[in-house]
Length: 376
Image (cartoon, rainbow, N blue to C red; front, side, top):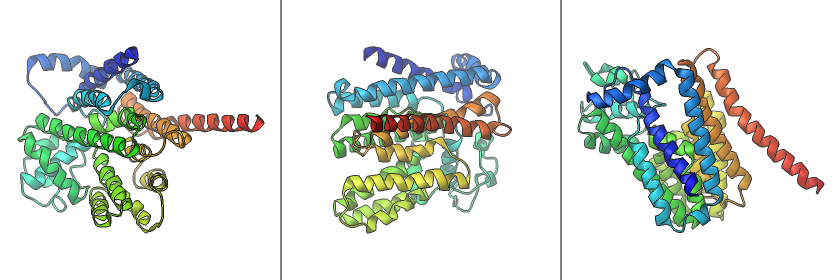
C-alpha cells in the first residue's frame, strides 16, 4: 500500500503542476522570473502541444482512478481511524488548493460576481460584470455578459473568500479553494459520523472527479449538496424546521435539489431508503434535465457521489461501481477540448462516445455476471 500512496502523491502533485499550463493568456498570476520560467514550458505544453497534454491528463486520470480503486477495496485495512484518513485528505487539499483551476472558468465567474456585489456594491442579479467600466478581471473571465447564475446563499458564501482575497486575484482563487477544502473535509466527517464506515469516506473523498472538480477546479456543487443532505438528515431526525431551512438554503444556491422536496412528504421511511430515492431523483436531473439546459458537465456528478457515499457499500455495490464508472467517464469528457482547443466540430460526438463507452462496458459486465449467476 505504501507504493500505491507513493504513486497517488506523485500523480496529485503532477496534476497540480500540470494545471499551471492552462493559465489564461490574459492573466498574470505572478511576475516573478522563477515562476515565469517554470510556467513557460507548461503553457507551451497546454496550448501548443495539445495532443501531448491530453495524453498526459488521460494518464493522470487513469492512474488516480487505479489508485482509488485499490485503496477503496482495502480501505478498512489501510485506515485505522478517522484521524488517519484525515491526514490524507488534508494533504490532498493542500496540494490541490494551490493548483490552478485548469479545466473551467466558473471560479472566475464566482469571483467576478462577488466583486460586483461587495466591491462595486451593485446588485449582481441586475448588473452584469461586463457593465462595470474598466473592470480588469473581464480580460480572463467568461460569461461576464450574464447576471449572477447562482442564488443568494451562494453569494453570501462568496463574501468570505472575497474578503480574505484582499483584491488580489491569486490570493482570492486560493481562498475560494481553501473554503472548498473545509467543506470537503466537513462532508467527509459527516459521512463517517452517519455511516461509521471509513470505506464510505474513501468512496467520496478520494474519488478523482471530486478531487479535480471540487479541490482543483473549485466548483460550488458541494455546498448545495452539503446543505441538502444535512437538511434531509435533520428532517429524518424529526428536527423539521432546521431540516427545511437547510434544504431551502440548498435551493438558494442551485435549484437542482428542489427535486428532493417530495421526500419531505414520505412517512415512515428509513434513512437508507430516503438516500436511495434521493440518488434516483438527482440522477433524473443529472441525466435528463441538465443536458436539456446545456450539456452533461462532469462536476454535476458530485451530486451523485455525495449521495451514494451515505449508502451501505456492499448492499448497493452495483450502484456504487456505476457511480465510479460514471465519474471516470465524465472526466474523459475533458479530453476532446484539451486535444483540439475548441468545443465544436467532432467535439460533441467525441464527448458523447467517451461518456457512453465506459458505461456500456460496465453494463455489459454486470449483464454477464447476472447470466453467469443464473446458470449456476
